[in-house]
Length: 288
Ligand code: AMP
Image (tube, rainbow, N blue to C red; front, side):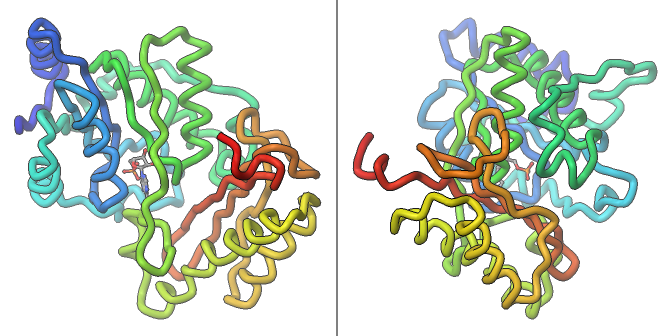
């Protein structure tokens, strides 16, 4: 595996592989790898001749009071893990390579970015995500890019910008990888002390409670959300949001009809965590 830090070197490595007929898969990450990241790398490895993993803690998607300074960083460990998955290139630029002096462009996806994490973290967050992802697509020019369903809103934002800007890349969303007790894996889980780690399982349990009700035929969003909310309450967790929204344009859903995204964010101890389930009305079960 090569570790590449500059855009010209990365472009040369990609065009060599492309000339040899390889398809190119990109896995964008901020590092601090766990099984969630590795699942994307494995998927990319199965599908492509060249696998590029980007490792860049993107400053523009963090707010002033967020954890940019303390975000876990361990490039040597990440490089060893990526190598073990058969990744070809770890693209680990510094901030000046991505945002040189005079950088002045921002990608804003309206609508989708104004709710859920966009409302809770501020518009800067998804502007930062959309801009860096667009840049990575321009730098790597992948055939396929792999994202985790853990960040469901991010998947929708990326799909929309790809469609709106006619970018020639396929977006693959991969399932959420969880710890044995259901907690969604996250680089931020390292912020949890033992007590917070135990309480954090309430996020997935809350989503499970709503999923079980949906499976039993409940369609009223308020009832589904209330069931999840009670589980969070019992764990002493007050969510930033707990909402049922359309899984395409994110409009608020009052009745489950087809499938919808139940998304939650909450601060638990020192970590801000997010999680989600796709709920499906029972008439869709057993179908495709
Ligand atoms: P991050 O390094 O947190 O920006 O994540 C990089 C990619 O890994 C994003 O597409 C995430 O959605 C994905 N990812 C993070 N956690 C998980 C998880 N538990 N399961 C699946 N994908 C994940």
